[in-house]
Image 1 (cartoon, rainbow, N blue to C red):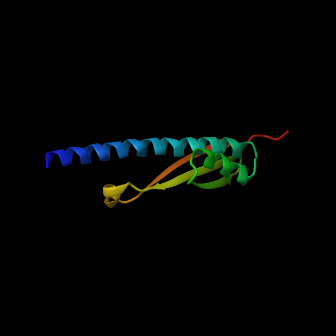
Image 2: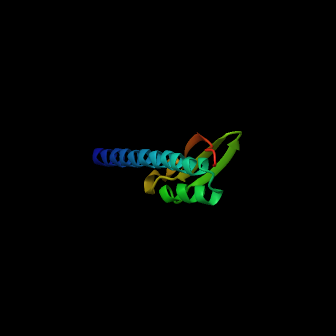
Image 3: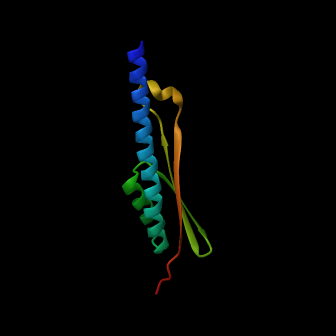
Length: 102
């Protein structure tokens, strides 16, 4: 019984490490996408940049005066026996000043 508990703990730890990497990817996708949006590119280009880093991401773009905000989110569910933990929504957001077009 002790071996199963150790294996379960290792599985949970490995999945948590994967979750951390996924969160970092979502945050980086938001940063990359907001740079594209700040340049004045259209929403399709912003979506493409975010999906390049996180293919299954949801991308929301909003403008507030001279700033643009991009929120990237992804729902992640644990594998196999960990499925009972439920799913997690990972979110990253970034804000940038819109660049002046000359």
